[in-house]
Image 1 (spheres, rainbow, N blue to C red):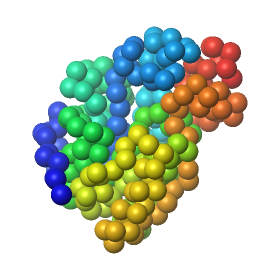
Image 2 (image 1 turned 120 degrees about the horizontal axis):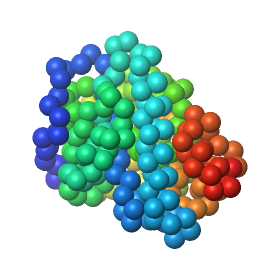
Image 3 (image 1 turned 180 degrees about the vertical axis):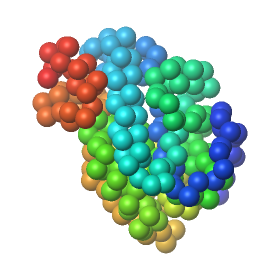
Length: 238
């Protein structure tokens, strides 16, 4: 089975922490590159503004959740492209390190990042930046599940997942998987079983990828995503 090579992170890792690490996978909010399924309805510039709001709200939730834990988990942003890093740094609050996802499909990217963070020797929780129902309570639950069981999976309503956490890195969980399909979470559960890895399942959340997702969220928004909610209100959606 192929093993994803580890690339050096953009920032040097500090000494190995006692707490887990949390990594947000993100694209720079550049018009034409993000929220491409939403852009035809709202425009490329507005879609990029929405991506920026989602990322900044996600970062606030992450820092709130991690800042209450002792010792606090390390927090990282995994940049989709090397050129994304300056833009992402300008949007993220202090405290976030930066690491490059590198090339390949999503599985190769996730495996590379999780394997690189302190050499895969500490628990790591990975999540995306486009799930506006995320709360500090859900992140607390995810980190506790990771500590208690050794793995956690947060399924998404579209069949993917919004979070995955591992106490011990295992590249096989990300190889030859049906990325960007409605079968990903199910196949990941099966892969956990094949590997003999116990995991806890987190509540299902909705990613905000399509216009229908946006309308559904705006009807019953999570007030913790205040910038995303303001974006919706400015357009009469909430």
